[in-house]
Image 1: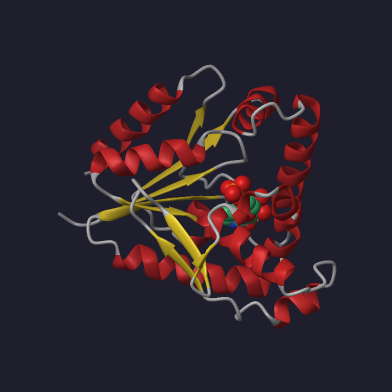
Image 2: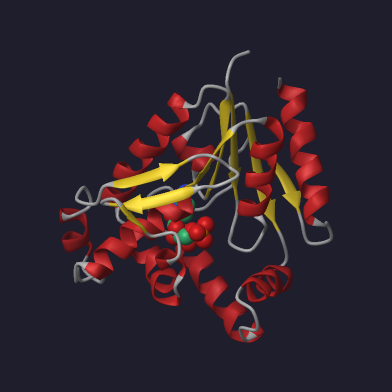
Amino acid sequence: AKPVIVAIDGPSGTGKSSTSKAVAAQLGLSYLDTGAQYRAITWWMVNNGIDLTDPTAVAAVAGKADIVSGTDPAAPTITVDGVDVAAAIRTQEVTSKVSAVSAVPEVRARITELQRSLAARAERGIVVEGRDIGTTVLPDADLKIFLTASPEARAARRSGELKGADLHATREALIKRDTADSSRKTSPLAKADDAVEVDTTELTLAQVIECVVTLVEEKR
Ligand code: C5P
């Protein structure tokens, strides 16, 4: 069978990662977390003292970090210059800075190239999650999903993950990041015209997974 390409986009806290990983595992597909790649390049920039308020400085070093993503949904990995950064990219510092870095066109061009080459190499197909996968990275994807949820539901899920983080602060930080991601000039967070929108506010994770698996199977 021809490899199947699934694009899953949406704002933070909609269950993109959990859904994408489970769908890929169930269907025997590869999995790519593109947010982790933007976090990884941000981590590298912070580590190397790059002034993130200066897009020219960020653009100048956009190609320097060697970012490698492991695409097994059961054990996704990410390294920068051979260093495992899976935990380091989840800190509040990286989370608060990633939108500024990911808005720089040179950064997007470089990461997009990595994403396309990983998708092209996936033998059975791949589930790619992010913000601009259906619109920009893989516009010919076989299936495009756009996950949404109310801000309250998204903040509650995120603070659950962060174990006891303040709900109000989490909600504010999340809204700030989504606004930045949706309003940037280069491939903003957006629903592709041909994407299926799934509102997950009232759904359990298992229900969202089942819904997406059914949609993929209809395409095969
Ligand atoms: O999905 P996650 O929250 O880990 O993404 C972190 C950040 O990476 C997003 O807030 C966004 O700024 C950026 N990103 C992006 N395009 C993607 C995936 C993530 O700009 N396809």
